[in-house]
Image (cartoon, rainbow, N blue to C red; front, side, top):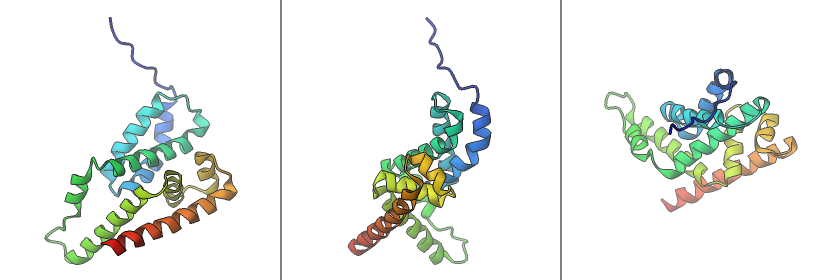
Length: 169
């Protein structure tokens, strides 16, 4: 008996062409790696392809899914080895010290972001990925007026998280 393949949306290709750059950008902002972001985008579009999300809500849904999936990758540590390998300085780099400091700071921010409450982390990532207040509100089912407050609280929580972990190191 042959297994039946799940139905794939008829509009998947059109949505993919329109939304792929944004999905990769959101995931890359969280992960710091275009390669890993493209892996996340693939996961997100596979899930979307089997979903019943209305086409008009696709961009918001995909953006949130990209942020969630990227945060899950960060939190799971599945890619820790490749990230640590990427942090190692290039021996021919003219200013290795600067590169190490920048990479360490990015690692600290991403780790702190992964410790924030999920809704705050997603709002912060989406807003800093270029989504408007209205788009963030629609994607997270918030009122547009509360997006600014949520983002400010997330920024404050991120600063506290960074300071708290800097003090303990």
